[in-house]
Length: 322
Image 1: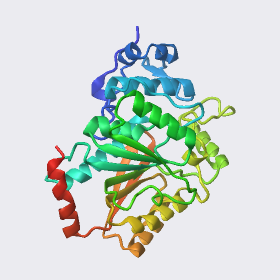
Image 2 (image 1 turned 45 degrees about the horizontal axis):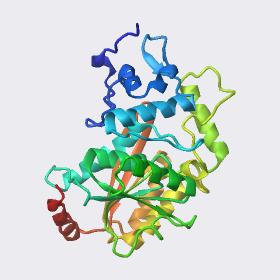
Image 3 (image 1 turned 120 degrees about the vertical axis):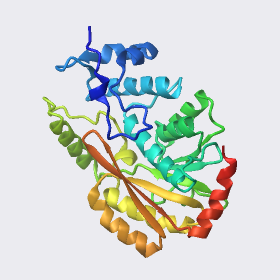
Image 4 (image 1 turned 90 degrees about the vertical axis):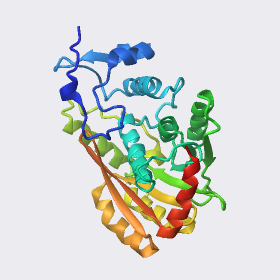
């Protein structure tokens, strides 16, 4: 019989207080809703149930179970080789941004479909729209450059019957981020992005090998990207720093279309140049949110071009969002 986890010592206090994944995975509950997961679960040296996080199939089945149990997602799948996101960390990003909106709204999180979020690089997994819609009722526009990713995201949305809350748009330009996606009259309360932070496939593979070494993995010879990922999801020319630089420059063109722009920042070294550029383009308020999931430290960089009066006028429409 597997040992029942001691909740007092298993809480992941580095995750956001509203994150549904702060405690050790309840595998009996997850298996009940996703029977295929059972074959991937084993008892580790500490007498706890777990999966092999190097096994892409196991990670995918874990995600399916988590989404079904905690978010009511009856169907979720991604094409082979596409990014399979760690859900706790993705949920944290959404919750911290919700806190930012609440801080501007008398500590009340604005909810409902009238809160519009642009997800840059929605991916085949469609994870941010799922969490944002299920947790706060927000509506989303997800952009992507990959046709198969768009098809997959649309299938998830359609099969779970929330197409009235999520729209997926094709980004036809490899050099654009907001242009071609944000229309003239679009207004977004938030933009979110998990940028490709490697500059090449070899760098991505090396990063994965370092991760497994830190986790004391025994066999590094067959290192794989257990969470998958295509080129546009994991790496781009210039890596994270150039991607964020381009995003900041382009955000200026849509300064009045968005209340808050944001992006995840994986590398601390990306921040100094990002701050410098934000000053150059005239961002009026810049915040950095620190987040941590396990051994990984990440940050969310948030900025706006709206002055205090413009922000106040924007927030007036939130009063009708509940």
